[in-house]
Length: 509
Ligand code: ATP
Image (cartoon, helix red, strand yellow):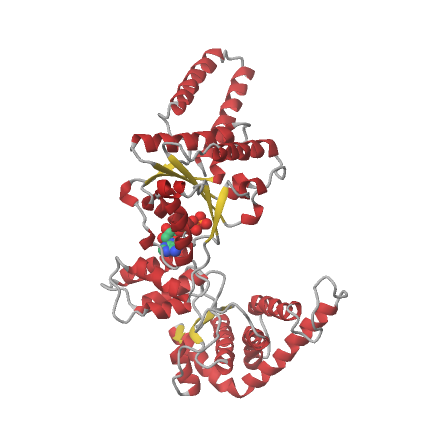
């Protein structure tokens, strides 16, 4: 519950209590007078800066973040640094007639380091850093948001003066909450007033001010922002902060293991390869979870096994206490072995882990290891992935002569992949758009693709019934099997752990 909600509940309850007292015949005038007196004192103190407005955070020197603490964002850092150099070297750029920037907009998925970049920008320019979030400005009372916007900018200027700094950075996270397109909110007058005030404040930033103020804002939804905010002269620079690539992930892991006793057997490059799609926040959590696993085991060092567990934890969620019964467990083992077997047959060396310990929404799962980050998918790749999705249910069918509801999620994903084949123009229909297809046509083509892969998987699994049962028994005993153990059990050989073009994917029941 936020402080804002608590205040609103408090106000509502206060009015209800007053109403009740009036109804009971009490004289509430003295009470109203006393409460009013204290509220007036509070607002007076807030206006004089004696009480900090809700949600305003000023960082101190102790928690300064520098660009060296941010991994995998070299492009964003370079662009940001250039913009900041305009502010730092104001006299130089003034001679060339360059106008310094008023606003920098950081856009990208959650947890990629936008807040870190803003804090590092403050350290780089030796600026006062005032952080707040878009949601802190939105109140049900008219005019409060606009007042808060004024307050933030005023606080930044005052703090810079007090600390004798030449620069101040105001950071607004989730700017889309306050800077969304005008006229689209139900209580839109209040939203619009708040945004208008922000525009006024931005226009009020002058190049010859004694304190140079810069607004840095972050959002995951730049498309939602009002065009008035995006025009040149307001947010002059847009910096994209994307999910890190493989090298970036390794850098971030290095940063977050700097202060941790990492064992010799840990290869951060391998972990980076396994974590395609992870953000910086995921990787920070991964390093932290690995350390927690080491602590739980009473280990002095964080070992490779702890990191593997941590990857599963971050990807799939915490281990659950629920224990399926013996029959269910056997079915889950067969299902996961089916996924793993087809994955290996189609792309040797691609299985990273298979386990039957319940985590998150899954009773068990098989995780693949990617060699490279993949951004484009071929027809062959998509068909192979569909086969891997279908393999769990088909292994169940081979061993038990029946399927279970555990495959529902796999089928969902298989259908999505088949749909991608159609909409990307790779199906027998050629280039089509979803809207132009007659009703039922898309369904027929998707069914055809799935049936084709079903037939292929059935044929592939057929000779491996004995192996599936063997691996199932081992899984029932050990709960978990590494990719290399799985390969040596099924194929009697060790295959490279790092195949090419395999997406990081967990197939879960
Ligand atoms: P949101 O959009 O959800 O506000 P964000 O992009 O602002 O997220 P941050 O708050 O900067 O993300 O990052 C959260 C945490 O994740 C950081 O405190 C840090 O520990 C870690 N982190 C994220 N990105 C990086 C990175 N590029 N390098 C190092 N650590 C990172």
